[in-house]
Amino acid sequence: MKQNNELGRIQPQARDLECAVLGAILIEKSAVSVAISKINNENIFYDDRNKRIYTAILKIFSKGEPVDLLTVVQQLRETNELETVGGAEYIVELTNKVNSSANMEFHINIIIEAWVKRSIIAQSATLIEKGYDHTTDCFELLETAQMSLLGISESLQSGDTSEGDKILGNVISDMENAMKGIKPELISSGFVGIDNLTNGGWGKQELIILGARPAMGKTALALAFALNAVNNENVNVGVFSLEMSKKKLIGRILSMESKVDSRKIKNGKLSDDEQAKILHVLKNNKFKNIKIDDTAGLTIGALRSKAINMKAKWDIGLIVVDYLQLITGSGKKTIREQEISEISRTLKLIAKELDIPVIALSQLSRDIEKRQDKRPMMSDLRESGAIEQDADLIMFIYRDEYYGITEDQEGLSTAGIAEALIEKNREGDTGFIRLGFKAEQVLFHDIDKPKKYDEPLPEKTNQFRYSIETGEVFEDFKVKQKSPF
Image 1 (cartoon, rainbow, N blue to C red):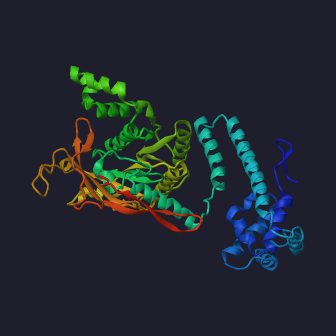
Image 2 (image 1 turned 90 degrees about the vertical axis):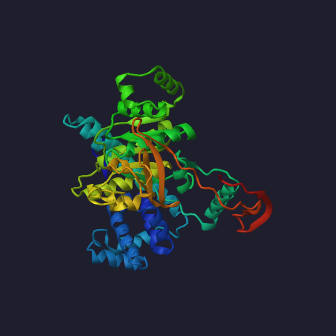
Image 3 (image 1 turned 30 degrees about the vertical axis):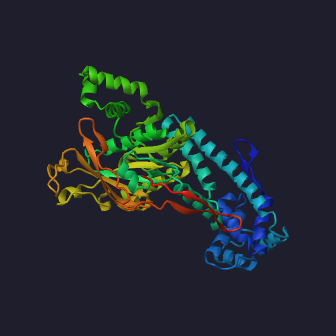
């Protein structure tokens, strides 16, 4: 048996159960799919022979061929590993150790538990060695430790498989609630037009990309979304500010909430009325609900770790990242597109893991400045391919006034007018919304009223229940349907 020489102890293992699981796979056709759904890594096996055999099984399964004693022996022979694992005799011996796959899932769970313990031991040994090295940066070591454990945890995660009719019951329930006027679990943006296009705001597990050219107001709009979530939805918000310091960010928020010019707050030249506005905000605003991390040069791995800690400590309901291109990848990738791909994918993973929306800001390409119409498009996102794919919603900010255009196509003044352009929306419509913009407070606000239905909704509508057990529909009661406006 292998031993941990440093500690003088036998590593956690379940070799007999490994043999039993492999034997079950070889004698029962249905066992292989069960095993592969739970063991996605051959290194979970402790015995090197069993690792090689399971690797051969994975190769056979991937080719769509039947997995049995003969095909496994042939596969090992093709890779010159048959003698290494003990020959055909060892494979036959595996099949003699079990009669069926009846307890296979239980055996697999024990094998995985042993692997988790071995992984923790191995990672800890590496961390101990680095900890004794005086040249090691302590913060890098801390990030390595966090990511090591997260990596082990992530490798164990797999989505549960559910029958469609069971999920349908939840869909019908959500639909009935919507018909009754019950608000779904969304976080309102705080802007009527944006909520209309997004069917109520930001949904759980959504990655929202907010893009704009510099000085267009993307940080201000993102902070407005955060403040509206705090004030209207009473949720805690995590803000990762890779460009602006915590102090400047809170100063910006104070200006937005009090409607007092940020320059006056900075230089202290305030009127009695402005001081009263600030005092009112200090008494009533929920600054403690905003959790800010302004670590510069943050890696995506560290951001994920910090986000998980924020969720555990404060139960945050929304994350804002300002901004995406300032994050670095966790590896040593030389191609920026690959790094952005990792960052974008991980931000979406954070949204799913924490079951909350993530709003990530993004810079746009300078190519916009070369066009006649400078309204952004998805192709203007820097290294846009992965971002377009991972995002659930992509929104841009555009202001004619920024480019010296004083009138729009209808001859109306563009002063204090911004456009929020929704170019991708998996759960709603695309289009644009006009917003008011006050430059002195860097503040966005509603100006357009929501459109109402031209025709009244019917007074009564059939309401029904869906039975998960039988799949039957019961039209047994009626309710009055109200307009959502």
